[in-house]
Length: 284
Ligand SMILES: *[C@@H]1O[C@H](CO)[C@@H](O)[C@H](O)[C@H]1NC(C)=O
Ligand SMILES: *[C@@H]1O[C@H](CO)[C@@H](O)[C@H](O)[C@H]1NC(C)=O
Ligand SMILES: *[C@@H]1O[C@H](CO)[C@@H](O)[C@H](O)[C@H]1NC(C)=O
Ligand SMILES: *[C@@H]1O[C@H](CO)[C@@H](O)[C@H](O)[C@H]1NC(C)=O
Ligand SMILES: *[C@@H]1O[C@H](CO)[C@@H](O)[C@H](O)[C@H]1NC(C)=O
Ligand SMILES: *[C@@H]1O[C@H](CO)[C@@H](O)[C@H](O)[C@H]1NC(C)=O
Ligand SMILES: *[C@@H]1O[C@H](CO)[C@@H](O)[C@H](O)[C@H]1NC(C)=O
Ligand SMILES: *[C@@H]1O[C@H](CO)[C@@H](O)[C@H](O)[C@H]1NC(C)=O
Ligand SMILES: *[C@@H]1O[C@H](CO)[C@@H](O)[C@H](O)[C@H]1NC(C)=O
Ligand SMILES: *[C@@H]1O[C@H](CO)[C@@H](O)[C@H](O)[C@H]1NC(C)=O
Ligand SMILES: *[C@@H]1O[C@H](CO)[C@@H](O)[C@H](O)[C@H]1NC(C)=O
Image 1 (cartoon, protein in one colour):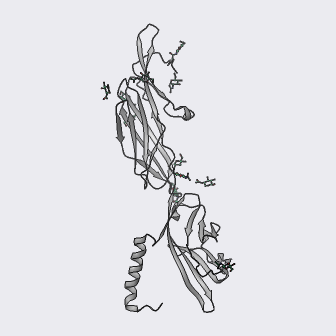
Image 2 (image 1 turned 45 degrees about the vertical axis):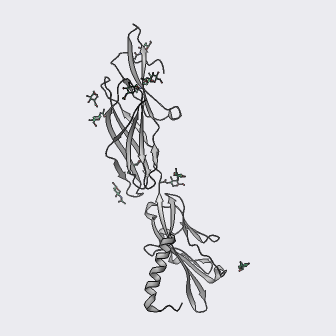
Image 3 (image 1 turned 135 degrees about the vertical axis):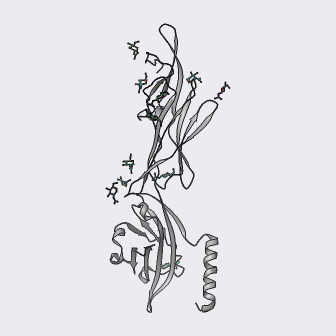
């Protein structure tokens, strides 16, 4: 590789730029928390070298060694303790698998392949990859907080979603009536587990619902980085007519549980539209 010193810097810059433009400077890899991530090496092996002639290893961005294969033999000696027992090498794809991925494992990794020849070790291949780690937030769940004062259109609720990563963008409430959809925003409360680094998210708010209308309440979690929306099961509030015994009509609001989620403790509050001694919602 007789490259003249004075042009080498420029050449390298051009190569890096070309790689960046072609998107191949560094491979992107994604893994789920507590699952297995791939750290590819993409070794073309154009000269069909056997493992006996090669020294292969991966290191992280702090230069800690994850795995080393020395002429076909695993060498645990140089492997950092935090990676011991967590890797396996896939010989067919030249990929290192990292098991039990943690949030802390996100970052960049490099694989190096050297040829072990009579003159010693000669680097023949190198590849970087960026590992990002995700954890799926649980489906948001709405919990209504009952208001002692029955004669009220005010609803307090909390919504929560747990054990996700990265931090979501937004959590809000959607209130749907027959002709309208209203968004209610508030400050998202987040707590992060200091060991797993996973987030729990919740909001609580109170708002008044329009009288004598059927409403469906949804809680929505907007995720990063995909902007995906995660919806809670709906919490339905219906206004129904209840025939009183003395033929006076009272209205009563009941929250309906979604059939498929009927085991869940949510939307379990009855709100009366008018103060009435009759608690029997005979329709249900
Ligand atoms: C990680 O996965 C194991 C088995 O796959 C499971 O038992 C464990 O609960 C999981 N841990 C977390 C924090 O999700
Ligand atoms: C590569 O080498 C192996 C033996 O080391 C041989 O069996 C195989 O046919 C070779 N493949 C190619 C494409 O040359
Ligand atoms: C997380 O959610 C995505 C998209 O919904 C899904 O493809 C993936 O299997 C889920 N992963 C886990 C570990 O639950
Ligand atoms: C309802 O929300 C209001 C305002 O956020 C709060 O002051 C009140 O205590 C809440 N009521 C219940 C029953 O939680
Ligand atoms: C219950 O509703 C009434 C009427 O809207 C309101 O004034 C009161 O603050 C609410 N109570 C609680 C505990 O939220
Ligand atoms: C919804 O539509 C009905 C009839 O179309 C109308 O009377 C009512 O005022 C509307 N409600 C709202 C909140 O716009
Ligand atoms: C997050 O929620 C889970 C499940 O409800 C709970 O076990 C955990 O303690 C919470 N973590 C934090 C940091 O609040
Ligand atoms: C995590 O937080 C808990 C209490 O919030 C604390 O007792 C514990 O020492 C922390 N652990 C680490 C590793 O920081
Ligand atoms: C609310 O829903 C119930 C049952 O679906 C229906 O009987 C009633 O007419 C609806 N009320 C309004 C105001 O739309
Ligand atoms: C709501 O009403 C239903 C039907 O009358 C009843 O079974 C349920 O216990 C009530 N829930 C609450 C929290 O009052
Ligand atoms: C519900 O109706 C039954 C019979 O009609 C009656 O005995 C009971 O007291 C009623 N319950 C309430 C809470 O009004």
